[in-house]
Length: 187
Image 1 (cartoon, helix red, strand yellow):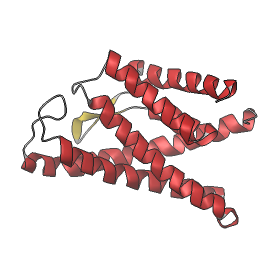
Image 2 (cartoon, helix red, strand yellow; image 1 turned 90 degrees about the vertical axis):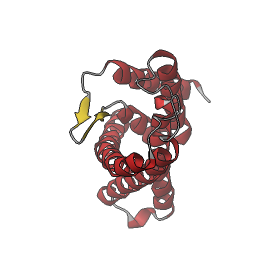
Image 3 (tube, rainbow, N blue to C red; image 1 turned 120 degrees about the vertical axis):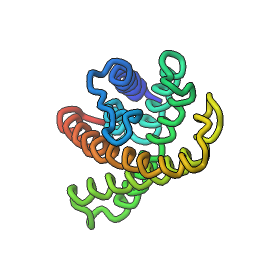
């Protein structure tokens, strides 16, 4: 990694952690108040789109490590759930980006942003539905000792939350990346 890449990781990771720990924008989901809408994932998506997968995933991991050490939340392994959620969303984005790079003449920017958002949403929803189904049944620190019936009832709420969170996170990250790219030479 060159100095510019390391500096970018440091800046975006600091922004992500700051937004995660002190953001005034924390909106409980009206249908499940234990799920909180925040904006800290936007810098991760922007960095991912600007500098690539290694930078994006590195920032996500650094954010997770800080949260595990400083403020894990109600569930000590909660930051790991967040890492899986954002990683699956980034994986969905990278698959569409790689496909679009091979077929660049077929995609205009508007259609590419819609495809990236859709793929990120789908990957995140499916992954987190499975993760929650698999792990919420375990006692803390892994899960909440939930019975199967409660987990099955919660999965649609978790899916809605993950879809709606990605629905604003990806387009805003895309917009930030485009704004930064137009004002800064990225090499």
